[in-house]
Image (tube, rainbow over all chains, first blue to last red; front, side):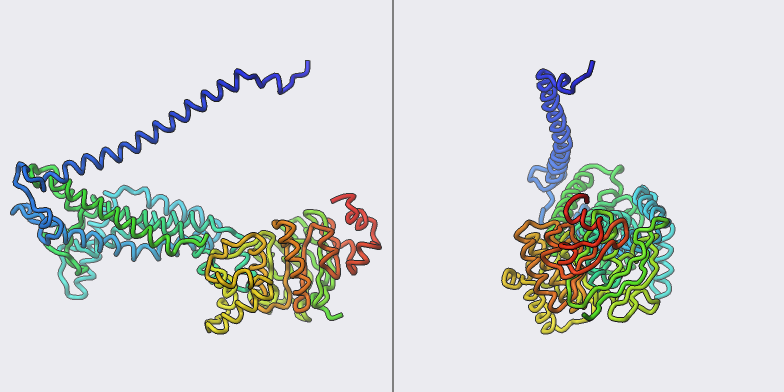
Length: 313
Length: 251
C-alpha cells in the first residue's frame, strides 16, 4: 500500500514537540544563568574581600583608600601599599604591547588572507593558531631566557645596565608576542568576511591591489580588527605569570624608562601570594579590583573609539 | 558608426572547459549594446573580458583580441589598471564601499592621486548629477552610502564609475536586484548616459533590452548566435534559436 506523509503528522505529536521545545528552552536558560552567576559571584567575592582593608574596623589596621589609589610606593615590608604608579605601569606596558603588535598583526592577517600563495595560507593560519594556544608560562620562560638576554645586550650597546634584562621593554616585547596571535586571528576572520564584490568594485575603478587592500578591505574589516585589538589588550592587561617572570617588580614608580624594571598589577598580585597572610594577602584582592576597573574602563574607551571609527554599515 | 570595441576570435577557457567560443563582435561608440541569452551562456563572462576582470580568476585562459579604440587590450604592453579607469563597471548587486557617499565617488580619483579638495568636490557633484542622484543626497554627502536605498546605491555605483570619466561603462544585470521603480530610473539614466559613454549591458529582461539598447547580441552556449540592431533582432531575427528565445519558448 502507498504511504502518505500526512499519515505521519498527528496532532499528539505536535503537542509533544512543543513540550520538548519548552524543555530545551529552559535548559538553555539554566546554562546562561550558571555562567552569568559565576561572573556575579566572583565579582561579589573579590569586592567583599577587596574593600575590607579600607573599612574602619579592619583587623590589621585600616588603609587609607586615597593613599592606596594614588600612592607611588609599594613596600610590603613597611606596610606601605600604593597602587597608583602600578596602574600607570600596567597601562604603559599593555598599550605599548598593543602599539607594537597591532600593525604587525593586521599586516600579517592581510598577507595571509589576500597575498600569501594558496599552499602557504593554511600553514600560516595553523602557525598563528598554535601561537595562540601556547600556555603563558611557556611564553614566560621564553621571555626570561631569550627576551631578557636580548634586552640586556641591547642596553649594553647603549651603555645602560639592566637588572639582568628584566625591564619594561621586556614586558612590552613579551606581551606583544602574546597578543599577536589573538589580534591576527580576529583580523583574519574580519578580512575574510569582506564581501568580494567590494574588492571587485575597487579593482574595476582602476585601483591597484594594494590600494584595494588598504582602502577597501581594511576599511570594511575595521570593526572586526578593532574587536581583535580589544581582546588583545584584555589579554595584555590580564597576563600575570609570564609578566611576573620579567617585570622585576620595582618598589616605586611609575616606570617610563624602557630599560628600567617595572611592576604591573598582575605581577603585584602574584608575587609571594602563597607565603603571606593578613593585610599583605587581603590587599591583593583590592589590587584585583583595581585591575578589573582598569580593564573595564579601557574596554569602554576602546569601544567608544570603535564606534567612532567603526564601519558605516 | 564609430567603433568602440572590436572583438576578434575571442576564446575563453576555465581549465579544460571552453566557456566562450570564437566570438566576433563590434560594439559601436556611444551606443548601448545589450547582451542577452539564457543563464550560463557566457554573456557575463564576456562582459568581464572587456575590462579584464577575468584575469583575477585562476585557471582562466583567453585567446584572441579585443580592441578598444584601436588598442588591443590583451596586448602585453596593456596596463590593466589603466584600462579599468577607461572601462568602468557596474555590478549586479549594488556594491558601495562602507564609506560616505562623497568618499565613494572620490575613491577612484583619489586612487589616481587626486588630492585637491576643490577638484574632488567638482568631480563628486558632477558625477552625482550625471547619475541623477545629486538632488536626493546633496544634503548628506558625508553620511554613509550604506544608508541609501538599493536603487540609490546602484545609481551611486554608476556615479562612481562616471567619476573616472571612462570611455565605456559595463553593466552586469544592473537592475536585477531592484524594484520596478528603481529599475525605470536606471533605464532612464542609461538613455542619458549613452550620449557621453558607450554602454554594454547584460540583461535577463527582454523588455529591458528592447527598451534601452541600440544593438543586441544573443549568446547561447558560449557563442554569439546573432547580433544586429535591437529593433531587427526583436522584429525579424534571422536565426530560429534567437526567435525561440526572445519569444519565450526557452531560457
